[in-house]
Each structure stands twice: as structure tokens, then as C-alpha cells.
Image (cartoon, rainbow, N blue to C red):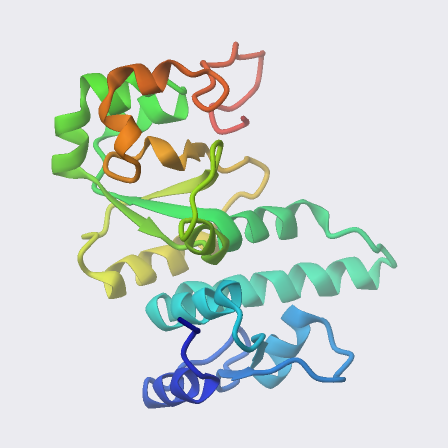
Amino acid sequence: MTPPPLSLYNALAAARALVTGSGAPLRFVAPDANPMAYEERAYHLGEVITRLDNWHDAYNADVWLEYPRAKATLNRLHFDAFTALRAKGEAARGRVRDRLTQLDECGVILAGIPDSLWAALRAHRWREVFVDRRTELLASTRFLFFGHASRDALRAPFFGLCGKVLRTEADGSDLTAVDSELERRLASADFSERWPVLPLLGIPGLTAENEDPAYYDDTRQFRPPRTMSAGSSPDSR
């Protein structure tokens, strides 16, 4: 099986009048000789470089179609950070762009997760989340894969696969509502804190092995809570 053609993605994007971070009409284009940086080109020209017959890039296009407001906001924030660094003559990507890339590549949106389960997840109390309160987790929470690299990796999941998580109060069955909330959250985000980590193979149903409670005893994958240092944040892990 090969990914859908760019013509299909472009037809869907045009029908929905999707735009990138500057408001430029979104188009998925094959790599060419244009020397502009990826995010800069998307911002100015609306062109998102998409390799042909490449599932990683196809999943990126899928996420653009599902979460267009959030993806456009990511593009704008990337461009703003990129421009600011370039104006200073700095070649490094910087903290903001690193945080944005982590969410863009590996983000998982948790919709409907109760406060106490969210606190337990952030504290790495994995058995509480996935074993002791498994029924409650399944009844309350939807796991939405925003990161296109995570979607690609889940085609052949491997030991230790992790994502970066963001919580939403929007109805997880309404992607438009989730997209709108993500747009607002990202526009006002404090990128000084790291995204909390989620071992993806711990998600109930993602692998048959996690039906056994002992699966969560493997600390190579399910790392124990870290000791909090003065002034640190629960998300700084």
C-alpha cells in the first residue's frame, strides 16, 4: 500500500480553504530546488514539502486536514521563532522551536482525562493510570495522535516508543472543537516547560502485552516518578 497522491490532499485542502500560518492557501508540494527553509516556505508560499510515497509526510498531510488551525498556528510560531533567531545571527533552533517540533512530530492529545488521572500521568504513576484505574481511563479519555511521526511509528510499534502529551477539555469526538482549543492553547503557550511524556505502548489496546498488569513493571519503558527539585515543574521530565 502506498500513500494517497498529493492531488487528493490538495483537492481536500482547497475544498476546505485551508491556510498556513500567514494565511497563504495551503498546498502540498513535492521536494524541489527551492532553497527556502521548510517552515519559511510554508509560511510565505503556503507550500508544505511532502515527499512522494512517504508515509511520514503523508501522515503530516493528514494532520493538516484534521487539525488545520493548530497546524497553521504551529507554522506561524515556528516562523516567528526562526525569524527572531536569524535576526540575532543565531544558527541554533532554540527552545521554542524544539518544543513545537516535539508536539508536531510526537504529540498525543488527551481528551476528557480527569484531573486526578492527569496528575498521576504527569507524575509517572503508571500503574495507577494504566492498571488500578484502567476502567476509568478507558471510560473517560480519548487518545488523539496529533504527531505525524508517532502515527508513522505506530505502523510498526517498537519498545520504548514515547509521545509528548497535551490535555484538552474539548470533546474528543469533535476534532473541530479540539483543533480550536489547540489553536488557542498554542497561541498562548509557555514554552519554558517541557511536554509531559507518555509511553505509547502503555495505552490500553495498543499492544496485547499491556493487558497483563506486570507489563507496567518494566521501568525501562515506564520510568518511575522523579524526585522534584526546588522550583522545578511536574512537566519538566
